[in-house]
Length: 499
Image (cartoon, rainbow, N blue to C red; front, top):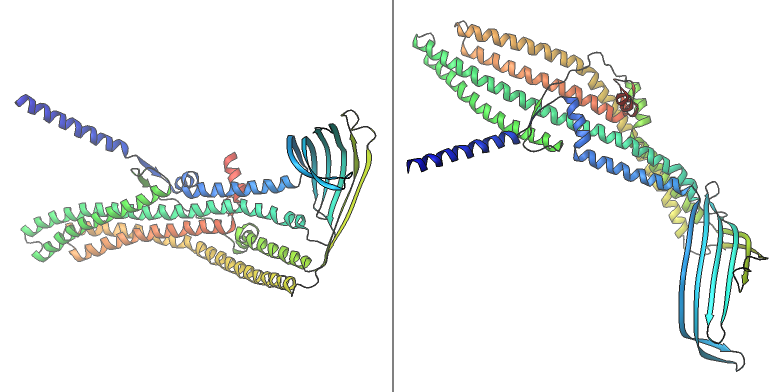
């Protein structure tokens, strides 16, 4: 019985050990810098995946537009169509309509080439056709019909030229798509920086709280020794004990915040939920200075929102042009020249083809529409005016955002320097005050104030770093310009790849 109980105990211990080992194995610990966090977000985050697919959709839309500017070749085939039914026919001998049985077989094939002419908005086309027909029954016969070649052109004389506007708008839309992709990735970088520094703060708070627990526990134990020799009174000892209890509670609260911010970053980076992340605070380029004029110039060139305003204006101008043309009369012409022939054998259907000429002029003149066309034209003009005003307001807002962000960024270096200096002073002062407290030359209130000052100085330093980098990434997002490499971000990406 004892051996069986011992065996059960050993098995239980083994299961607990394996379970504990599995949990340790499942929790992967990684250390990330700010650059690594941003690179991982650009590669693995769901937001990055969405941005890439949205760009590819617009890329293929542009490819479709480009393909539409090239000649299109179409092969049309009807290999066979069999037809048998009773139909109504006119009998000339009896001057009566009669029902007759009809049985026939058809086959046709053709090749067409179409080329759009952007300048005038017309279309060139070239066709070739071959048809076969065989009738069965009392009048059994076979015929072939061919169009060896037919060349034509169709054109709206006073109409709306959609090709001209597509040529203006579609390349701009694709340029916006490329800029928008970079803009989205800079936005992802800014999100990543926010998550990074949130974790950095809570990580630092947790480390400080953990150190504070050790310090307060050590001070309380030292206080008990000093209380025994009447070096401090009972109130001071109670204060030290309260500090220790508060430090333990602060550590628990800091642990909760640390888990929350770590979970937020792992979710954003699309990592496993059990991943433990340690972050390393970044440096800051002390010599970097951004010119407001340079930032504004680059924003006007690269910002996709500003290019989007330009596209909106072009689209509304297109609508004005279309409604203006539609409010007047319209005329179109279709002209073609070619050859055709009919024969009872395939060998003769291409022999001595006959000339085929087609010219068609169509005119549409609105007489009374009760002002519908005029109303659409006026609406289009008013919409264009509204779009132009909205675009200008959007441009002013973006320019103001660039100016304020650059101004904030340029003073962040001084704030970081001041925060760094304050942190060094606070840490040195707290260390000296702690030593002086241990020898009894300062009271507990002074020690508590110095500890709070040191913690606040640490928080201020991390906040200054966060403000610096978030401002920098916001400037990059607004301008799509890499001021560190002094080149557009698209070029900077290629430069980094080549290096």
